[in-house]
Length: 216
Image 1 (cartoon, helix red, strand yellow):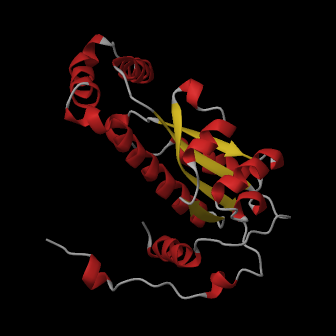
Image 2 (tube, rainbow, N blue to C red):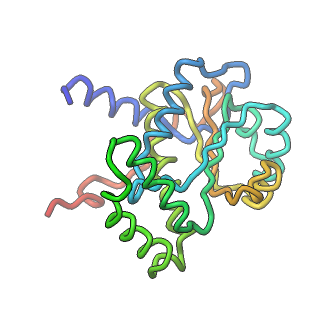
């Protein structure tokens, strides 16, 4: 990374904040949004399993249904795009097999050559100790995607606001996720800040690097 790009990254990270008021009249350009969708798809996950579904909500009617399930936060209806991060619940050996088959196809290798890797994943996530908390494990993967999305958005000059103040079960009902085996974890509003948002000018409150980072 060059000095100039390092500086640009930090400038954008200082620029970003949890946007409280979006400009409802300003939408994200399709080309930029396509890149942000790709940033979600390219998010890393443990074992590469990708136990998630990203729902992009643009429909004003759906947003209006979700707002009461989101502490009535205005970001839900004012943002350009609302992303709902959902997990696939209770992963099974069939889910692992689907991933293994995709890996074999993508890398032009045989499924059999990946059998040891497949068995390791299954013995951990499906039948091992992790299986008792597999949905919590999947939720942590979704948060990796959330962080990746927010950073990517900041680099492209797009504002975001992560939203944990939601009723996941209510979201699942509105979005009809339960029949497919998915469950809402968190949401993130994306768009462009309103000039009236006073929070945009507030200084970031962060502990000094010396307190939160240790080089060993």
